[in-house]
Image (tube, rainbow, N blue to C red; front, side, top):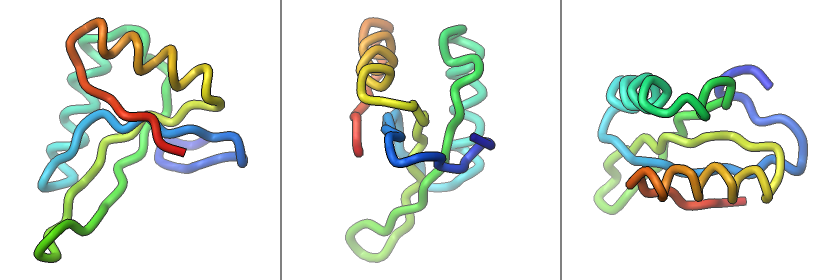
Length: 88
């Protein structure tokens, strides 16, 4: 998969954080990659969503190839004190 592109029907997304602009989401991904070596090689997506009042929120998402990989990634993030949510 290319960065930011979903590939295959079995892809599972791990939401890590939400931001009010995409630049902050990009910066956060760089910081997470620097802090956690296990994110090296993990594809990411920044997904725009509209929330109450029509505001845009940019969700920082890690793309995994299956549920097991998503659960392992999320578990590692939680042990390190980060939040995550697995979505399909």
